Image 1 (cartoon, rainbow, N blue to C red):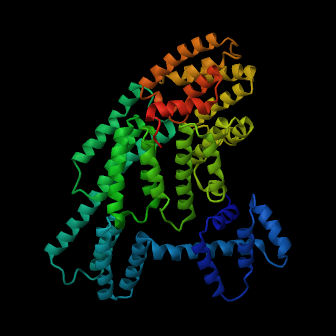
Image 2 (spheres, rainbow, N blue to C red):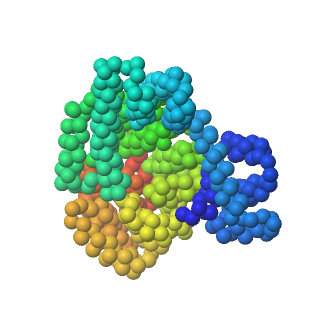
Image 3 (spheres, rainbow, N blue to C red):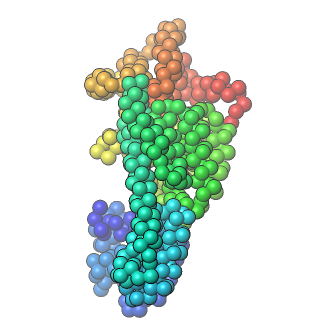
Length: 515
């Protein structure tokens, strides 16, 4: 992304508090304020690219130089954000204090510098910021060396060196542990959940390695406990064991809530844990608890726009999903205006996978409301950008839903053409069974259905047996979590609205009265 485009994006990510501070900061500056005029222009308009912003600014202020103003505006905004970060972020505050301490040592103000170092070491140790703790300890050793180790015994020197080695060992162990978690998380995000027992076996090397690291763990810290629980929770997610995943995510959430001083600087990580709980609650059909938890995260506070967008994404996805699962597409559609400004207006702040997920749920809501055109438009937001989205596991779901929409529109020739390529792709991927995809494609390729209801019911009896096999497979069921393809096929064969089939299934599963 070009720096000029970065500036436009940066302005639109500022929170109200950040904008207030920028205006306060700029009001104290002397000289020309053309950069403030540029800020006002960027804040009040949506420009598709930097050239459009440049043209608008040049028309409004012909005497000002856009390049100079944009570079200075970028610098001022970043300086403001850095100042605010130093005030509000514990890690940044300690890092800033460490730099100040280094300046004190350089000016031979050793007593004050040592006092500051002790404060930084205690704070870093308390909040388990091991890299900062190591930097503080190394700075002390550097200062002692410059003073020719005056007023320190050899025994004390060895003790300080030993303490540094212990911190380095802890950092190395945490780094190795986190590497395993990152690798497991990567597989979940880019390869999806496992679909065969063989794929589950392939995870054993990571699981055994992680257990080995836990067994060799240095003195236990809250950070090491968190990494272990994150690994375990993701392992349960990737293998479809949602009951154990839910239990582990609850442990994680309790850990984060009872040690806020350690992870106050990482709200995005807490949101990930919350999402794990929501996903597991939905997967296990515990909708009443899910709604209670949604009410809880509505009070999740953050000044950062990105975090606010992340919170709204969770609320939209899981509230919408809970309505879809029980066939209440009307309420799901009515939710959308609530998310227009914060979520839909700032989707560019989310990564491609999260954007795709939002478009998918928008499409499913329109599909359930029998609005094929709107559903198609939502899918096209992803399908028209294969370079951005095709690597995502969710992309295959988009292609299946896309075929369902063409079936709704009776485009049977198109379906036969597209499913040939789809089937070749499935056959090439011999490591997965793809029973769900194959079942759906076989139905779609049938084309027009018989007008005789007895024939339709005979077909449903056969297909429902295939879906019974799918439900018996923990691995195959993971794709059904996104959308109940069996309900859609049943609705087509029985000539009933999809909402009625889903409502009936929901009532059967929850005794007719669950929320």
